[in-house]
Image 1 (cartoon, rainbow, N blue to C red):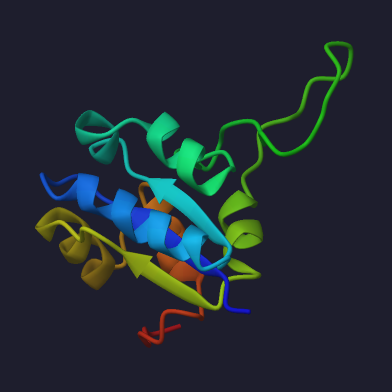
Image 2: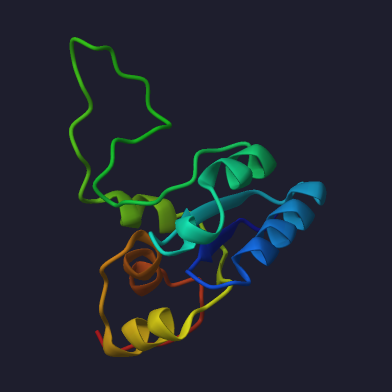
Length: 130
């Protein structure tokens, strides 16, 4: 079964990505969601969390919400998280892909969870210089 990584960038059409996530979930296709800070201005992460049943990843340095940690041993910030997220993806879709995000990807700028993960992912089929 294919595993989809859905990146949501900032744009008025961000709400339409909810429908993509809903359709994937309805077909029992695992779907993980990533959001840029600008996307969160248009739609809340909780909406995606409710549909896909998993935390939305918004920052590559945030604590990992899928791992349990006690207060005595807090989870360190993770700088390798984008690589963990993309390792199991069969397809990576950015929808909507704002002009800002497309320009960053073309220039190799990785300044959000969406762009960092995309540049690290082999599943999207876009080849870029190594």
